[in-house]
Length: 81
Image 1 (cartoon, helix red, strand yellow):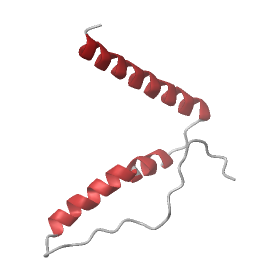
Image 2 (cartoon, rainbow, N blue to C red; image 1 turned 30 degrees about the vertical axis):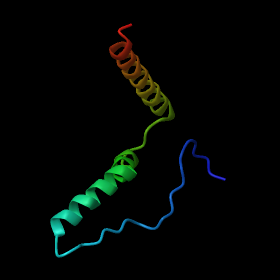
Image 3 (cartoon, rainbow, N blue to C red; image 1 turned 45 degrees about the horizontal axis):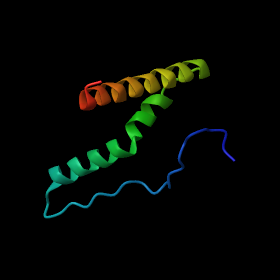
Image 4 (cartoon, rainbow, N blue to C red; image 1 turned 60 degrees about the vertical axis):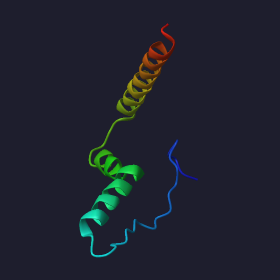
């Protein structure tokens, strides 16, 4: 059992993008999109430096607050509250 919380386990298969009709630029765009969707670059950046647990909690709380405020702003726009 892992000590990590709220982490979904992904299979370690890697990403594959097929180059069709010699369109390397299109394949590169698709590859970048897949990498972005999987959050690979974010994970690499997070692992470059040690982050204290208190800093992780502080960051998670700030992100949650930002999501909540964004949702409240959306509701305010929709319903004029």
